[in-house]
Length: 197
Image (tube, rainbow, N blue to C red):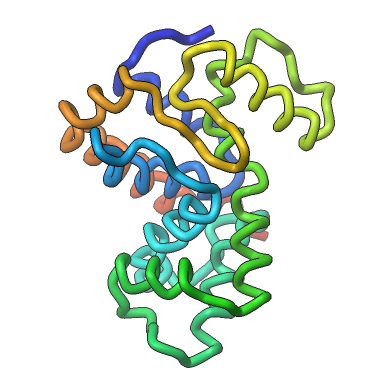
């Protein structure tokens, strides 16, 4: 069980991956965790993932990997021709998504949070050997473990509750954490074509 609160632990949470969800989830959390804000709904996290990815979509305009569905959601949202464009700010994209009543957007956001909040905690649960379980059983087990061990956050009722140590660490080291996450994202995008079909 990982107990250290450090930049290295953040890096461990971001690997391995075959989609960009964990990258943008961590970017959203690093930018938004504060002493006043430590509880996030799964819907908010999904909107945050897409909002953080928006600028990369504008720059690269292609799928991150074959399994990544952020691209599809962005394409669909843009096809609606309402209020947002590829040049919209992260905040505008977030507000558009969180307030959307479009059933397709709601469904795609729900799919985005089906695994990412759980997979970010993998380094904390490696010793429990969850690989033989189906993904939904893995999620259930990770949620249970997060309520009994102090990880990055606890998962309950489709919300995450960031632990006090991590709130303090992020607040005290936000710039360094943000720079490190952005560097990992940059390198991942530079290498992304190796994963495309």
